[in-house]
Structure formats: C-alpha cells, structure tokens
Image 1 (cartoon, helix red, strand yellow):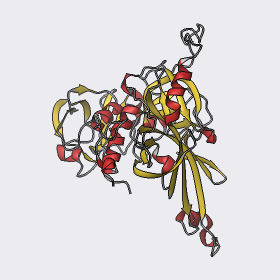
Image 2: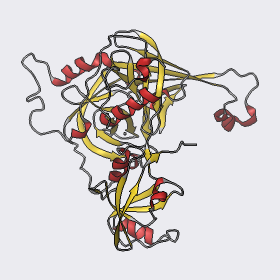
Image 3: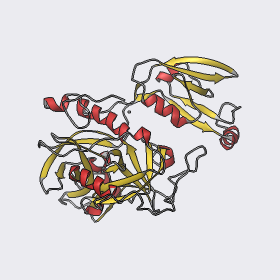
Image 4: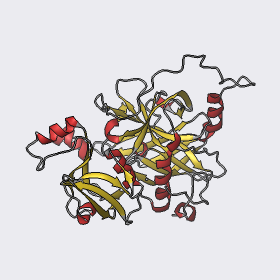
Length: 401
C-alpha cells in the first residue's frame, strides 16, 4: 500500500489525521443496483422515539428559500456537492461451479458453461482530493473490477482499500489528484424536521437531486430491519431509489450528514442513511488498516417494557424471572467473552456505562461502540436487588463465519 493510503487522515485530506470518534440488492436481468430493499416488516414501532414528521410547515414553502439571485439552497447545495458525487460500477464473474448455481441447478449445470458476469451500479463521493471515495460496502461487495465515473465524464479504475460489512461502509481509491471534495457536517446535531438533500445515481441517472426532511434520527438497526449491522440510522423522506446507495445526504448548507444506504419496500418516504460521524470513524480505519475493528462485550440484550417482561416470564426457556418493567436486560452472556470475564450474568439489569445512565439497548451499543478496544469501561448493573459495579475491557468483535 502506498504511503498516502496507510497514513491517518481526516476527510478532505490524506495528509491530515482524523479526529477519532465507530437485504437484499435490487436487481434484474443481471444488473444489481446499489441499494438495499427492506421488507414490509422491517420497521417496528418502538416507544420513546422521536415521532416521524410527515408534513412540511403550512406556510409558503419557498418563504426564506429564494435568494436575491433567484436561486435556492437546494440548487446551491447540489451545485456545490455535485462534482464530488461519482458513479461506481462494480462487476464480478460467477462461474457455473459457484455454490450459488449448484444450489439452484444441482447436477444439471451444463458442462463447459461460460462464467456469468454480474454488474451493479451505485454511488459514492470524494472525500479526499487525491482520490479517496466513500461508498457502501454492498455496492462493491465481491467485485472483481470497480470503475468510478466522475461528473465530468472521466472514468478511473478503482481499488477497494477496505470494506466493513458491519457498518456497510467501504473506501475506494482512484489514481487522480486535485479532485473536488465534499464538506462534512455533524450528524450528531441533526434534528427531525431539518431539510435533507440526496444526490446519487438512481437507476443509472447520474447526479439526480431529491429533497425532503430528516424524519427521525437514532433509528436502530433492529428497527430498520438489518439487525446484523451496527449503526444508528438517519431516516429521511427525500426520495432514495436503487442506485442511490453510497451517495451523500446533505443538510441545507450542502454539508454531508449521512450516506444513503437503504429503502423500505413498498413504501414512500422511508429512506435510511448512515450518519457521517460514524462513517468518518470507520473510513479512517479502512484507509489506515484496510479493515475496521468494533468493540465487543459478548452480551445479548433486550429493552424491557411490560409486554417484553410478560413474554420473557412466560417463556419456559428463560432460566430467570424478570422483575423489572423497564431497563436493559442481559439475556445471555457469551462464554469466554469480555463480559463473561468481567462477571456479567444473564438476568442483570444494566443501569449505566462509563457514568452514563441507559434505559435502552441501543444506548448501550452506542457507548460500547465508542469505547476504545482494551480500555476499562465501568458498568453498573442491578442483580437480585443489589447494585454492582463491574469493569469490562471491550475486545475486538470476532470475525463472522
């Protein structure tokens, strides 16, 4: 790897260090479009979340939007960011002896059959003027060849520096200099009702711009319907379609606040984006190490409410009685995990981590994700009516098999 790939940096420059903070592909006819489709049961209806905002204010929607030069902030944002948005074409060769073909055709696969090439298209954006591009991992997953097309028509071969399926993020490098780059916002400051602008290549239509609002923040991966991932998603009603995956979600200033990644099947106004603060942290690791590590405790959790309590207490496979109607319950502790070594037990109620009180499992996940691997994390739990303080050192998440 070249020196500029291995050095630590922040978005916008390979030479500057980061500020370190942590489905189904749509396709037809051999074309896989870079967006995930969530099924009808993907979203739950949790309590204590910010309600979805579905209507704009009743006053004139253009009031305060038009400027003295008859332009508006959406057009300005699109003009500012558009040159940094790229189309990513990925292809992979699948032989007829591939297990996926054997599973479908069995022994009926014809001898001498030619390999099949699967092609997909997605979006990405340039965050370093020397050619670093951020996109979704599922856009380039398994690709033999990645090509990147800029808005000015230039096309480059892309090298995948790293991908992280756990957050669905990947970094691609192209051999180019003095490229236009995006400006980052702060996704932690987003509030429902703010403007949201999406730019990408839906259905292969380059540099398409759509606009709406931030409908909600902090949607958990379980709520969204992708529980195998670690992310707290932004929900938006800005139109997101197949091919938008990896493209930027902007605020009214034209700053990138998210990465468009998933849509809800058979619904309108339900798109989801990965917060840019998460992407910034993961991209730094991908550029520096080629992979991202995620802190791991080794516990299975549930957010309690009266219904969950009743269901658990009526389940004969649960070896303990749940006394609490709210809080974060530890259902299971993985043997030999950091949590097991620290003395966690099934049935414990997590009260706080690192001095921060928690009431939902998503809060626990967020704190753990932002805790450096190997560092001490103080955790208060309630066990049999007593409050205990345990110290755990998160370890790296084991590789998936």
